[in-house]
Image (cartoon, rainbow, N blue to C red; front, side, top):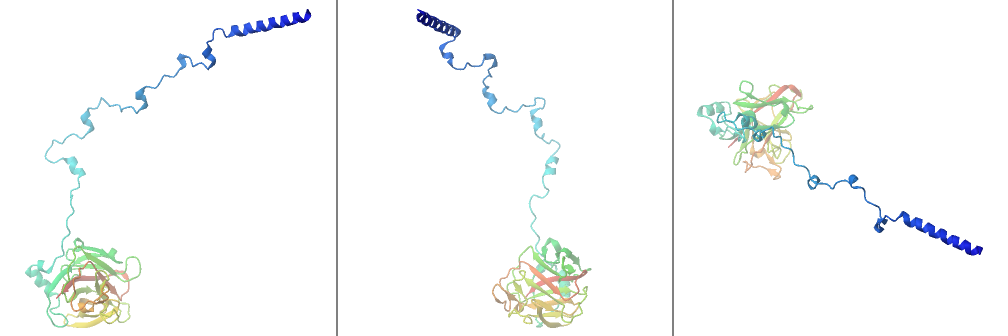
Length: 322
């Protein structure tokens, strides 16, 4: 009997516990086995469609729409605002051509001829074909480079030019103790075909000689250094040139590359025939006359003096003749 009582008591206890457990979940639906959502008053509202894009800018209603642009000018035919913002010159001005011999008046031609030798060294007369490097309008016609370009100026006949204007530069390089040298490019190319030589004026009266004999020299080259007065053999002494004393021509030659020997402090005309020029592109002498050579630029060489920025050299009227 005792064992039956114990079993009965155990069954009663299990039944009681079972009823308590069922009673605690009696109000909960079967699908509440998952986590419940947040109450409505804590749920974040879904974003409004237009908030997902950038809002349109707010227009300031206090400013009239037309105030956002410049009001039309009504004071006359010219708008001053436009004049302030538009350059006065909208198209580049074409460079002037160098003043050629044919552009001179009869009186000017006579004045130029009066300061030039009447004949060439062979006693022949000559015609002026091109005054490409006459320098008459100075910086309007020429672009200058070279180691003395910083000292370059253009001077009139009261300050060293033989006629019109001349180019003047220091007897020293800009940045070191070296000879004065400039490269001058006219804004127009000039054909030198059939010209038999180059005639030019130099003034070395304002330099101090080194004291060594046979050192002062000058020359011009064509197309920078492409065509130089070095003679057909491209050797010292093979390029023949002449300087004019005022009464006669005196023969000279190249003593350093293309540079022609001249007397100390010489001021006057130098003539170099085409036959003394060597064309490095053709690897040959030019011949008796120049061919179809367009003068792109010329280099003016000097040497044989004490280098000083207080002293200066003048080149003028670099002229092609036939």
